Length: 297
Image (cartoon, rainbow, N blue to C red; front, side):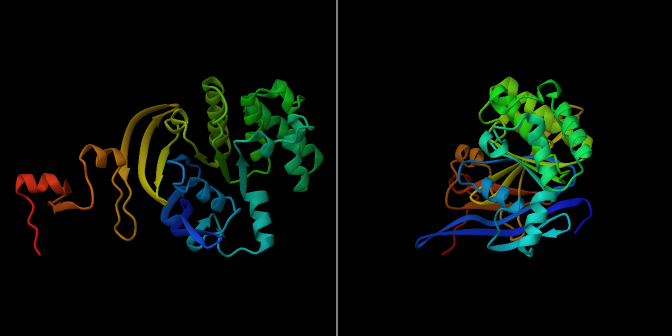
C-alpha cells in the first residue's frame, strides 16, 4: 500500500441479515484516504455512510473485501486487537450527546476519562485535557458539567474527548446535526484546528453542506458505493477552486450524478462513444433523434 494512503477500502461488501431477509448496505465500495486528510462523507439515508463509519471505527466487520487503516487489517483482528484499535487508533464524536459525555463529570473530567482507562499518568492526562479544551475554545468552561453547556459546547467537549488518546483517525457522525449555524461553525473550526495541529485524519459523516464545503474532499455515497468526489484547493480557510468527479471502480462501473441523469432523462441504457481523449455519454432517446444510434437485433 502506498505510504501516503492511510485508509484503503477495496471492494467492501456488508450484508446484514434480519430474520429471513438480507440487506446489502455496502456493495463493492472502494475508498482511499491520505494521512492527515479532512473529508466529508455525504449521501442520502441508506447510502452506506454509517455502515462505513462503523467499519472504519472497528465497531463492525465487512462481509467481504479488504479494509486497512494504517498498519491494521480490520478483517483480521482478534478481540484484543479490536479493543486496542478502538482505544488508541480511533476517536469518535457521535451526534447524540449522551453517547459522548457522562453527565456527572465536568468537561475536564470527561476528557481525562479515556486517558485514565488507557493508563496515562495523572499529570499528563490533566495537562492534555486542559490543552484540548483550550484548542476547541472551552478553556473557560472546563469545570462545567454537560447540563451547564450549550449543545455546541457539548459537541466541542466531545471532540476533545475523541482526541484524548492521540488517535490517528477521528470519526464524527453528524457533529453539527443538532446545533445552530453559529455553533456548527465553531465545531468545524475545532475539528480543523485539531486536524492541523496533530495531523489527525478526520472523516465527517454529514448532511450539513456548510461543513462539507469546508473540508478538503467530499465523497458522495449512493447505493452502497462511492459515486462522486468533490476536490477543493484551499488557501488557508478559503476554498479557491472546486472540481467534481465521478468514481470509476475496479470493475469499470461509473455512477453518473443523479442531477445529470434527471436533467437528460437518462434511463435503462446510454450510448457511449470513444473519442481520442474522452468518452461521450448520450441518452438513448437523444442518440435516436440525432441518428447516432444503431440498434442491432
